[in-house]
Amino acid sequence: MTLLFIDSFDHYATADITKKWTSNSGTTSISASGGRRGGGAASLDPGASLSKAVPAASAFVVGAAFNFAGYGASSNGILMRLYDAGAAQCELRMNPDGTLSVTRNGAAVTGGTSASPLPLNVYNYIEWKITIADSIAANSCKVRVNGVDWITVATGQDLKATANASANQVNIGAPVSGGGFSLDDLYICNQSGSANNDFLGDVRIDAVYPTSDGANTGMTPSTGTTHYSLVDDATPNTTDYVESSIAGQKDTYGMGDITHTPVSIFGTQINIAALKDDAGARSIKAVTRSGGTDYSGSSQALGTGQLYYSEIRETDPATSAAWTKTNLNAAEFGAECV
Image 1 (cartoon, rainbow, N blue to C red):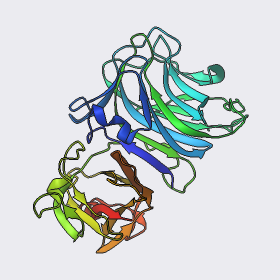
Image 2: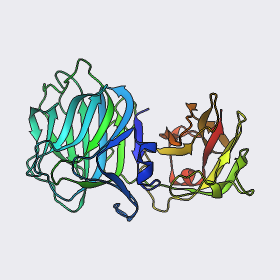
Image 3: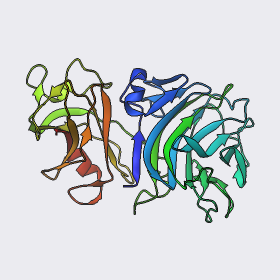
């Protein structure tokens, strides 16, 4: 799998940030209407950050829409940073003059700084393609802004600061001293697969919610007989829900349609807010129902605190091809007790 994580920032509140992200620091919040299309966005005050643990890899592409209120007065303006077991490898920085720089744990590299500053108070889509190595190949570290190359680090530069040519954590941070921003439509890829292994471009990420009961209604509603209305909340809660203690029981739901027609659909991410309510092992699987067949994902162990358990599907499992608008709108998504 190449597409690792996406976030529209539409489907959870400030109190739920660490249900989806591994950790946060400083003042981070969710604005329900601060996004690019009137939906949600994350807001990071100066010096704040969000971190996501990912499978270790040597090459990544990270993209997101940033809206900066100011450039910040410090050279420590880290926007994106890759960590290897907590040790910094390399980062994309915003400088006090608004230009961008790629550095290796703070050390400058040849070809690593943009010629132009970013505009303020408007969303710009920034993408960083990076390979961690002692001597990088041509075009293996680039930064694009709104689809245009702004930085191409020179061939042979060293972008490996630790003993390992890999990272397992992606950090998104706001420059200190005045460099806060809003954040929307974020994706993280590695470069291991045959698709989604390069710049995806300026993408939009839409959150859709259950709108009907689907073909599977095996779980037990906390109230009433309708299932989907207990799990269609715009932010997660534990006041109404579906539950099961029987392995193999599952619910799937008809979802709201996407109304625009995308050029490409790079993938779907099923986000299940779930927990276990007793001792003993219990797991959950995300379920995709397409073409009349159920496709269960990997088993994920539950804890007693509610978290988001996510599953990426880069292709339609019924066709093994990229999702189409028609097939996506016809699909059902849900969860299975394990």
